[in-house]
Image (cartoon, rainbow, N blue to C red; front, side, top):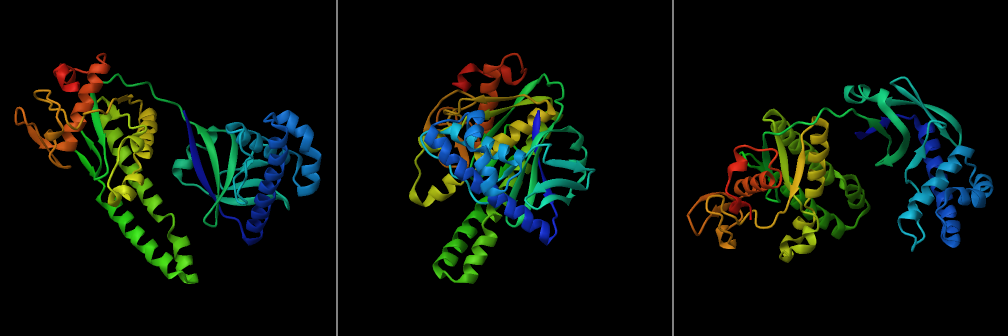
Length: 367
């Protein structure tokens, strides 16, 4: 499988200016190429190169290979939607291939700029160093919050797939970011609390409108995103490790399109639309793939309303967010844990090749 690693560059001030100027010229060239691509209605790289190559090199001072990479970037962007002319941010990524970027051991990289080749120190930890011999293809130069990074793709061997003995059901939510069928819950209180504080702070700073307020807004704009991403990584790692240690696969709800299906009160809209369930699911899936743990997606309908004892489905079975009490047989427990158990049983019904204890659950509980 392929993984993307972010490697931090440590250029000196002159090198940073050279990288920034190269990035701005490269993306300005992409904007000019996009005019021709849209006018000629072509995403063919060879045809575009014949139309714009000489003019772009002369106008923007790009090297031959950098011009080719700019043409390729425009063609890929235009191919995604041919009804609009693509535009490019001044500090958008530059695609570097081995002709214009080379690695000098594990501590430096040689990268082409408009001011010639620059030998720039890089920062790598043990995780990166262990995988640098598996770099495949190109690298993207990224500029983010005043820092340059190289995004490189590495080929990581996949372990032999695990033949699960059972399924670990995982219910994704907002109050609890995740809950598994073994009763472990991963609270979202820290993430939700941070989002609430950040929203109030943004509101105050935007209302104030001073230069210092704007600087603070810019400084803190990614804090919420970084914190939520770190939490999702942490939760995904724990879920996958637990499934691997107990020789179980992971069953998740297929929540695609849920934002369109569910309506919430106005006071809850911000929290609902900032819910990062897709990112958490993606982290679980790729970490599980690296560990050889299978992941299945099941239909989420009524998983939180189905009684695992008698199979009764009724919205009154869940009187509030936290609790479950069946109106038929009286079975009760934490709502998210019961939903996760229903997800696990539904996976066992869909995949009877894996499962022993969960596969013996009554079929009605998965309806």
